[in-house]
Length: 225
Image (tube, rainbow, N blue to C red; front, side, top):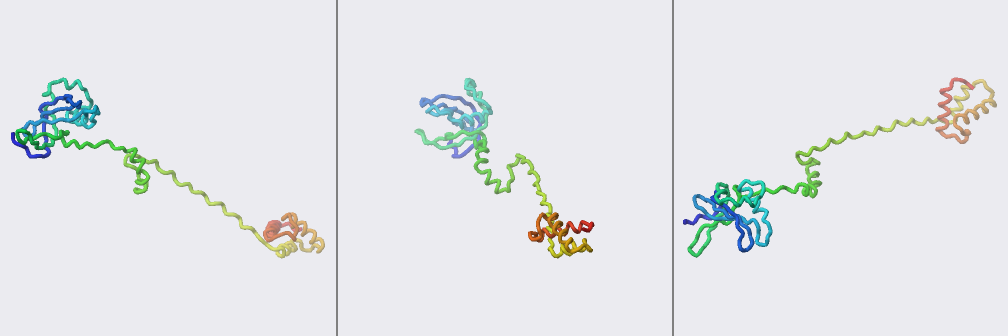
């Protein structure tokens, strides 16, 4: 048999079976047609220490188009498993009778380059805050974000009325005009009474706002004293 150039080739299964080796390992053995040459290869299902080879099981499932695993299925004739597409890696082996080609690896068609499911939750927890900052808070596609409530505008405080101020002299002048014709002694008595009534203070204790309060009262009061 001519030696094939080492490399990766597409192939088709001619037969397949499983067997348990003396070491305890369980293999799926296949005869594969590679460019018209039948070569033998295998996939490990159970390692010699009893550990299941998850990738081995998945590769065999993918090759034969299975979704489950049923050991009883292997009770069929080996030729039952013919016609499945695979990809093989061929190497040259030196034997007692010279060099010959052998299959080093058997993979599903396409190279067996399987994409595992992403640990999306773990990565989101680890890098979520950084990516939100990077993209300005944009979430991952397909995850709608509730709209932000409109900002509540706090109404400005109502304008405070400006304090009206005045002086004792200005108030006395207006008071005298409102009480024109009254004797001076009577004016002094009425004045003290009016200051106390409007401000709650004597004139000696009044400030500018107190005089402003008195002025406002007298301006609004058209009845002379």
